Amino acid sequence: MKNSRNFWKKHTRISTQRCKKKVIGGHALTFFLPGSDPALEPVAMLAHQDVVPVTPGTESDWKYPAFSGHNDGEFIWGRGALDMKNHLIAVMEATEGLLAKGFAPKRGLYILLGCNEEIVASEHSSAKMIAQYLKDSGVRLKCVVDEGGGVIPLNIKGIIDKTLVGIGVAEKGYLDVELSVEAKGGHSSAPPAHTALGVLAKAICAIEKHPYKAKMPSCIFDMLNIVGKDVKSFPLRLVTCNMRLFRPLVTFIMGKIPAAASVVRTCTAVTMCSASTAPNVLPQRATAVLNMRLMPGVSVESAVERLERIIKDKRVKVRVLKANEAPPVSSTDTDTYKLAAKLLGSGSRDRTVAPYIVMGATDSRYYCGICDEIYRVSPFETDVSLLLTTHGTNERLPVSSIRTAVDFFTSFIAERTAF
Image (cartoon, rainbow, N blue to C red; front, side, top):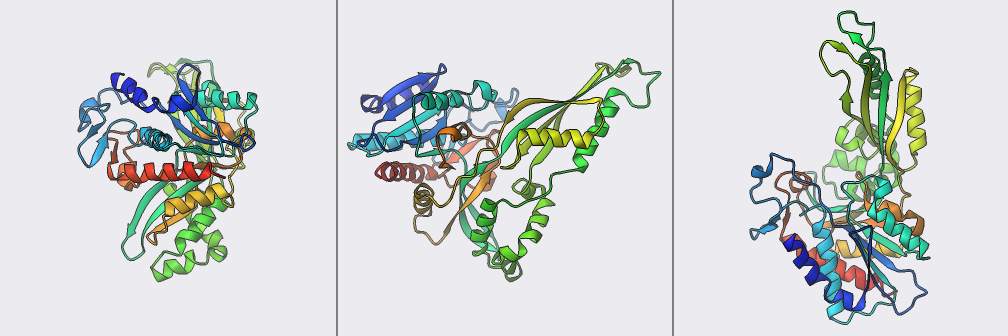
């Protein structure tokens, strides 16, 4: 907590001299730097301050203490190093640097820092409160930049040797559903043909046997079309350079590969189950929880109706626990996207910038009602193996990636608020 106080003391000294600060929902922070032309819609940079906890009992598995922020010269170690204190601090450093040089934007700038993205249901989200506050204040945003995307080296011998920079133009919706079955219960020595758990198991099997059909969204088609031009292997290059012709085949193949299927269809995972409290007691109630990630265009209502059609058995009740609709897909044909792509590409032949869909949910989804241009960007070059430490043990960020991220945000903020 002491380190946190020191951070905010340092990073709000200059900004609060020129920015208007407002605290929302207890700990969420909003900073607003007015532009010289109040008729222009402001730019908003998003981040969340909170991080996920460390799993109890795994503290000693960390090379350095999980909340130490240890810098060994190569990495910054600690919870939130990748999700997303790196993004938050880079935005703050960029803004502080600009303000120290007398930054005077033409278009207003918001820095919006939520405080509970990782831990609460949508109805209590601080980001949702901030978005509602802006809407009630009559604010409409020109663009929003939040977490997501990435700068990932793709080094597959003989196939591709490029750094892929993804800009998230969309993200999946989120749906938690509880399935439940009620029964009389009783002693296990005289069981019915199907216990409550047996009925529930049949429903789960039916759901898993009927996955959503794979459909390639335009943003993934565009990404594969762009990346495909960098493929070296001839047989594969023939496909990737002719995506319009091979789109159905590529979609079918991706749908059969779990890691790839997540970007071409709505996914359903059975994650939790509960029934009897003892081995010899028939369950009076059995429940299971499904977690669904909805593709843009698939509504929560349609997903629930589809589940009910597949299950058919009226004994199985379907209840929504938590839901967020997939936000609209943002266009790649905007000045905001083109600026981000230009800065992230940095004119390098070794980098390929492409749109894509973010698998997880971000705070940016709450701003759809007041903004059309929403993009998810993570300008930190990080190996795939390191990305797997997000929310895990030994989460860490390459020190070398920090300067380029600060430079990106500095240039983006300065240029996008200038017109």
